Length: 487
Ligand code: NAP
Image 1 (cartoon, rainbow, N blue to C red):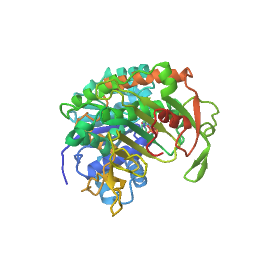
Image 2: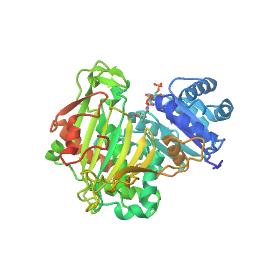
Image 3: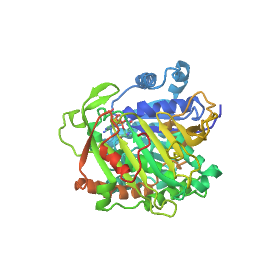
Image 4: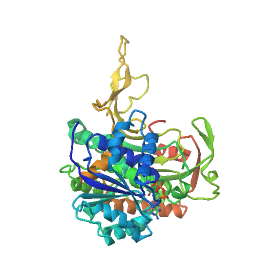
């Protein structure tokens, strides 16, 4: 086991919320058990409801049993882990309630301090102010911000500026959990450590690129949050844009945080702004209607929580163009939606056809090579190639075969994205986190589309729950003579 000494105090604000129990505690439990967190490090939950340390440990235990796989929870390991658990009662609206946190943190004034804001962004500014009033922000402090950071450029600026009053940009870690997935990081390894992709990764050889993030679930009781955001703000502006950046960016001069983020921001600044007519013809927005999911009837978006009217999209599809030398003329098709037929996130790099075929393939054209990077439910990378069908037939016949890039996993536990990202915060490595200029460039581009949608430039379409989205999304790509990967 690799043991790395990472001594710090981690305070989770909103520590009894869904994200904290479902993702953060399990990630910290694994990091601690696997030797990535010094056993003297403290995990401090800031919760609104008063609770004894013992009650808190019991609650964390029951949540770990619920959210860890059966084999991952271990009584003995938990008994060690619980020594790191602490609880303080804090109401964000009450500055005085921070006294317990101050008492705890001041026992180790020189330790690295990680403040994880697992709360609605409306609280970010006031938590920062209280931390500052209580002199709890030191040069060794870092802050992790959960999405959503605003719902447009202006509101994201307000939130970021509030936090920047108290923390330097280098102390701020804006999390995008997609970037914590191994396969996503592997995009850089694949592109920048394999010679044969180097000459192929451009407009001369790539026909187009597709990025899909499809969920089979609906809004699952999060209507209040989701209806303020929708697919474009919740998924496209952040997760899909980050994936697009990793696929499209130029090789950074090194793997250090700013070199990587400099290249990503150049991509975002090269996105072609959409005109009104682009919004009309290159974007699709839609809401799911009643349908079925995994064999069960499910209500439509507007039937779920007693809300009858909403102009929030649960599906978005777009054709995106990047105006730079490498990608001139290569469309990026993006789509994301809820209540889709299946949970599926993938990036498809579709290479161009060969210039001339010497093979007669029963009148069918030779299929083009594809690189398919699957992010969920399974993480895999597959290269689709043409191969001879074995046998003695007179004419050489071809078939498509898949070259699977399987990574041998020499570990009993495959780390979750939050584990990777929390460990990076502990190690003070911000490479996989979004810098302010990235967030702003992505909003600037997305705002134009969102404004066009609010002016009804493109009508809201409908799709049945449990399908691949509206027919308009199929037409969006079919108009260019192409089709979605799974069609
Ligand atoms: P949540 O379950 O509502 O948790 C929010 C927490 O904040 C609750 O524990 C709540 O305390 C606490 N809180 C609210 N007002 C407070 C106050 N005045 N003083 C002290 N504590 C207060 O939300 P969540 O799902 O964990 O999400 C947290 C953040 O992460 C949100 O911004 C969300 O958008 C983002 N996020 C969540 C997920 C996810 O999977 N859940 C994924 C990505 C991003 P009480 O328990 O006392 O109400």
